[in-house]
Length: 102
Image 1 (tube, helix red, strand yellow):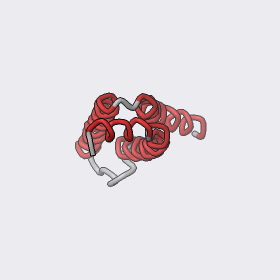
Image 2 (cartoon, helix red, strand yellow):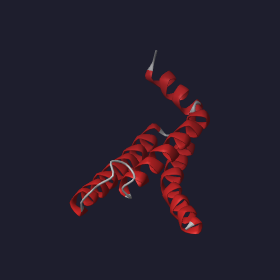
Image 3 (cartoon, helix red, strand yellow):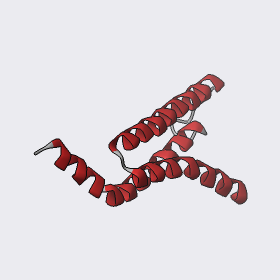
Image 4 (tube, helix red, strand yellow):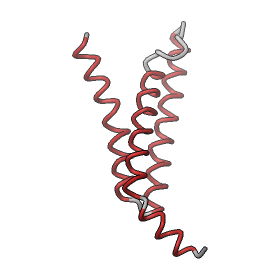
């Protein structure tokens, strides 16, 4: 199979891949936010809480940048926009929702 055929096949799957990527990123963003606020592992000390926040931020940043670079390099614009939107909007929606419930 030639490289050109593989490239065209990847470009055709942009629409269906975008929906899957957005769903996965909503889950990843929610779990990382939960880790950052101490919901996973129940940190007992301030140091453990800070370490959990740093880990969540590091994973979030790598996931955000790595996905953006990958989807831009593959030429998948819908997937790229969906990736960025899902990862940037999900934490905001969760925080606003928790604030309104409190």
